[in-house]
Amino acid sequence: MPHDELTPYLRDRWSPRVFDPTHELADDELRLLLQAARWSPSAGNTQRWAFLVGRRGDATFTTIQEQLSKGNAGWVANVSAVVVVCFQTGAAPEDQETPYLDLAEYDAGQTAAHLTVQAASMGLHVHQFAGFDHEGVAAAFGVPDHWRVATGVAIGRVGDPATSEVHEKKRSERKPLEEIAYAGSWGTPFA
Amino acid sequence: MPHDELTPYLRDRWSPRVFDPTHELADDELRLLLQAARWSPSAGNTQRWAFLVGRRGDATFTTIQEQLSKGNAGWVANVSAVVVVCFQTGAAPEDQETPYLDLAEYDAGQTAAHLTVQAASMGLHVHQFAGFDHEGVAAAFGVPDHWRVATGVAIGRVGDPATSEVHEKKRSERKPLEEIAYAGSWGTPFA
View 1 (cartoon, chains in turn cyan, yellow):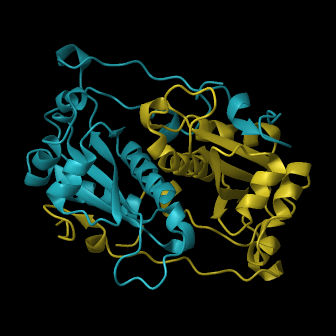
View 2: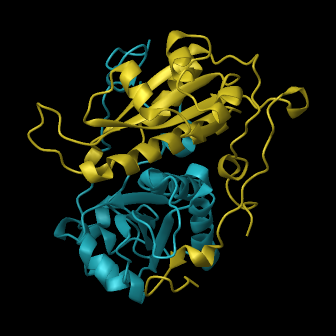
């Protein structure tokens, strides 16, 4: 099945590489996107996530740009904001206990998905990327050793491929459901 | 800010403990929920996820039930389906390369979030849980050593607390945005 039957926010979601360089996110729009991430669920409500937030042209955005791979530097320059998603990987000095630490990365992924759905509801698109110097970002912003930098979440309005120097990729495919959904035992397709 | 301004699928999302034990998921509804997970994004489109799918009363569901913590056994008995989310943690014997393995857990979290949003669009609720014997589930279903069992995703229709023996918890709170969203440097609140 293609995604025709999914709810529109999921059905129409994809990861563009051509963004509108004239689009700007209003303050309250960016805050609302972060609120979507903030209200995401987490194991035991531990919320082991944090976000570095840059808007195109500001100092945070520019610092992130300096760490981008060649393949991402071009298109990311045109997005309206980048949110770098971080999650906790170890105990802080003050922590007595660290329950659910092994699900912090999983929950970080959920925050990005919730932000993405909120963006869709606002007519925006998101393109997550991992092609950047993670250690460079951690050093530039002073991310503590017991945290890890996961991804960059680029947010903006889809641009016109005809006026862009960036090559637009086709929507990607997926493995068939039979290869990923099992019942009874591992590898037995869910019917 | 509370979640008032979020898009309804996120705004009205919460994790109930009281589900309607008479509700049944149709085949095509369950498949559609899995399609939402399937079409979730992943690093380099690597899709390092798999799902064990049980519907209340079937063998897969019952096997999952046998591994539940005491705290979860009661309420999970009334949900319509449970999807156990797994992700790849190491190279398979046939793998030459394993790019983005370090984001497999993050992407697994995204699949659960996408499934949750699809459920919301269908008038259903989701309650993810980690309180079960992960090794027991892995053994019962034959999950390979280079995969990890992450969470159970319970899906169903919200029940009536007045007729349930399960105690319903209040909606949980969240850390303030200032504590999780930074700009300029780690810990400096995004304004």
